[in-house]
Image (cartoon, rainbow, N blue to C red; front, side, top):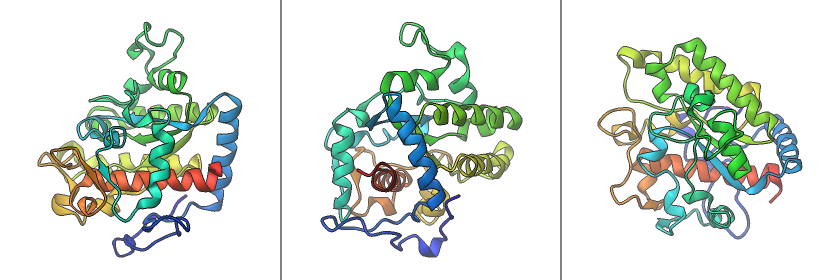
Length: 276
């Protein structure tokens, strides 16, 4: 399992990007076990026709509300010192991944909705077993970026959430898709939100069990203004013009920080697992 960084270590580089690119990777390096297993999953996916330059998003309104990563698709971004990430931008823009609409990412998405066949549009995916299957069939991804649990925390019984998460992870594993896991964050502790530690614990457990890359997002956004959250306390904050800037906005907006960490993880996965 990838070690969780402390607040004090957030700005410490874990690995040099490359000789041509500036900036530092602020995530811990992938462990040898994660790299080895992800390589096996990746190769199995290639044998099934997965595209190295395709990903899918799995998530809820924390993807949709801030238009997560979409600005890379229409050129409204500034990499700041992280110029080495341009290779990631170009790779996934070659398939339109940043601007795609994924059936696995919708407002109000829960794990149950993701895995329940009743939510599949048969006109879009007539042979899909569920929305996750539909997304995999449609986009043939090598990577899935997973940010799930905020709606589940207040709407899904824990055991059902756990079972659905295991089903989703097994499907990704069987279909050769590397899951980039992210622990979600909220600034709320009362009512149903008191269960957040148990639900985010499942994300860590799934990352450990399936040996998948993990981003411990709370460690990076808690020091930000308002803990990186919108006034509602459970949506990540974002700039009103949806411009992605890694020239300082990652220290202001929770979603921009998440975008930076996700792009860094995509870079490491491509470099250390895919050999690209």
